Length: 140
Image 1 (cartoon, helix red, strand yellow):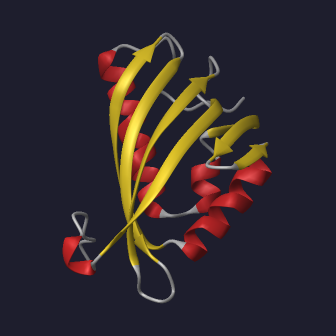
Image 2: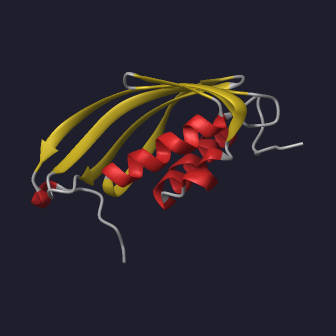
Image 3: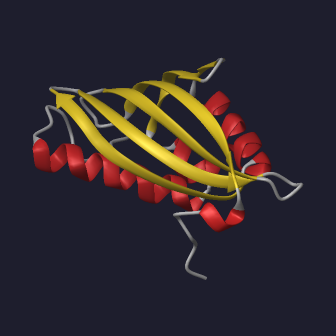
């Protein structure tokens, strides 16, 4: 059986671990690896897109990181209770024309007992920025 520790119910330490693990994974920009953190029947809302199942999540992430180039994300714990975590985040990326963006958002997560995320609801807004305004730089 698949599992992804830490497991609910969360405490402050395990909620922070879960958020950091998500940040680390998403910054690798590997759709296959990231998708394994979600249940096979995961349910998502990302902006105006609704996804059902791990396969749809993986396809979404492939599209996302083909569009959002040099993506760099920072997440922070907002709140937690039992099997739920709320996160706020911001990330920077540029399009294929070189225009930079900073995207701000909030996520609500719900986890199964095995630690896989069953539900993810994200609200996100994009702001145009100049490259000189970037806060999150990749260490190459």
